[in-house]
Length: 209
Length: 117
Image 1: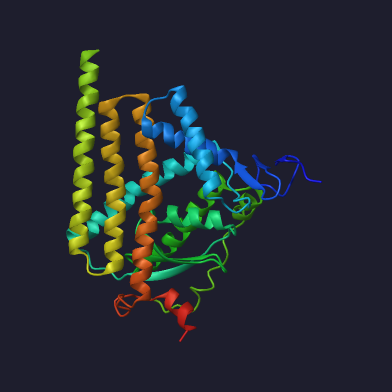
Image 2 (image 1 turned 180 degrees about the horizontal axis):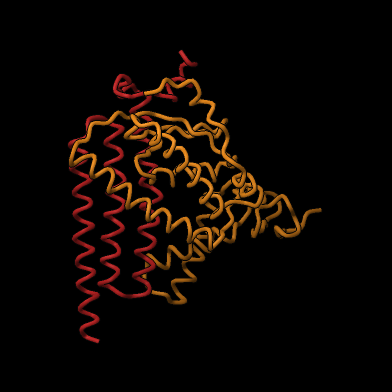
């Protein structure tokens, strides 16, 4: 006999901080998601009043019921210090990469581009996606393809004729991955990225440029 | 106090100008770089930085708590969606053969897709 209402701290199958209700078709409501949607709603109205908060809650619950998500734990954990570090690093990175791209365009330095594959250490889908988004900001890197099965991202690097640039691009991807997982990852994902990066098997046997 | 406000206003205006100039540089890059993949670099990075600078400038002019939060939301979504769009452009360009492979120094994705031929 199932209860009409079930909470995540009693039922380990549910995502954290959520509850399910109903008798035949059980619906799951994810509380952090509802809070986030409400925050966006209030910000869109740009005044913080009780009416806005209440209508926001109603709208977000309605959205969550109308477009139900699969009941899986995405593996999203927020680490405030990690998020600050990631934001600071990303902003610095974005500045240097914009300067680099600008220099490349204005002075038209001769360069050869290349596509490199970088195997990642994290395994969860969310961390893979977050890393890919963050990597798009590293200097001279833009994502072309992500392989989910092997957790490999393929990055287009602007100036690849110098081997140290290639190594720097690889190291940067791993650094961004570690920062991202330390900002949003679960505990075992963090333990995974604390290990040294995998040896670049793909780069082996590469002819020296 | 009035002087202070003036300083903040001027800083906001300067940030707006720098942001707009950065976006302009991105557009010039899109015109000058040779192929799709290089252009996608120029289309995303300077744009995102310019957008954030413009938002910071606007934040310095508006100076309200709710406005700041809304601007932060805009920046967040910009940083979230920009790379996705550029990835889709790069991926579809790559898969439809718009990429000149002889221009690339080497290509580890091609080796994966064709089985190392």
